[in-house]
Length: 272
Image (tube, rainbow, N blue to C red; front, side, top):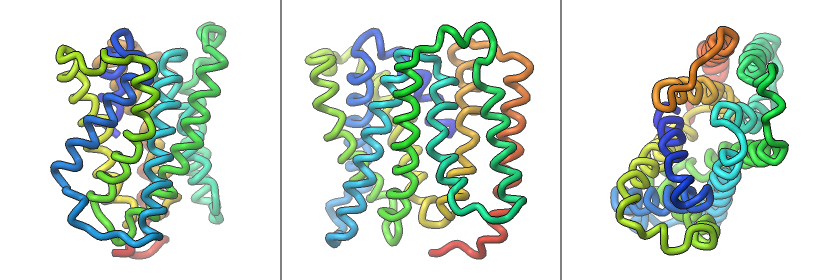
């Protein structure tokens, strides 16, 4: 989460140069090249079911990135991440049975609500940006579910294949929006930093983690994303936080810790 949100802050620097779709394509293509070189997925043989899971995983990942960066063109990072988080929350809510589980979800929702701009800034939020962020959230839910299926019995090489599929999906949009600007050597260092922080590192870590934790627990743990987005905005973009924003961050962190302590324990040992 720390890598993802740091990369998102850096990615906003690319928007004036290549646009949202261009930044998405640059991020995913460079990340795919790095992951392919490191994990060499061609050494592994996948059956038809695994390939289908990888295609769904990569498709959800590519669409999630395209929608999210498009939303960032219209609304601030913290708001976009908070709205996008409706996807993981839907995964977390699905199948919740015990009252204590619901408590952590409610606490996360309370923190999420505190991070939304209920004050005068609310009028500046673009409806199109909100819709795009919610679409990214739906794709995020698919990323969690399909990523768990694709990663079962696999490893980081599955992440490399998934990012490769996502890059193939995003590249035509990037070329249509930015053209040859994507090949400008001046932007490649920043693009590589975004690719490593926003895609290569977190997706590889996700693929290692997903087969070992329930999808619902993973979704609740992702409640930290809005908090990390707010912190990244403060440290990198110098966005100040109001007191209720700090309260929202504290509530979300508390929900994540509570979920880790109770849901993980009640779910039994992880499946290897």
